[in-house]
Length: 118
Image (cartoon, helix red, strand yellow):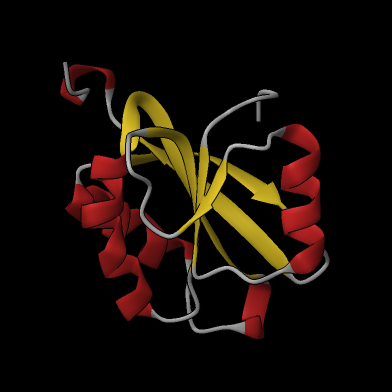
């Protein structure tokens, strides 16, 4: 994440993660931002949580991203394919996976170049 990025955090209450975010930017909102932002971090534990991607994609800049944070491995019911399918249903594509901690990982979703809002 670039220093100074505008970030929204949804359904993610990890004090260590939030502390790390604050070390990179002070422009952080919890929930829906008032204007478009660069990055949204969405916490997801169940398939129903992924339905929020359809709304959340409207919150990001055309070149922004949504990171879906979820439990790693067998710690939760979500599989990579669940996230990928939900992203496609929302009009987004996955393009990166990251490990955030020993227990959580994240998948990044963006607009396809041809689908980016003007």
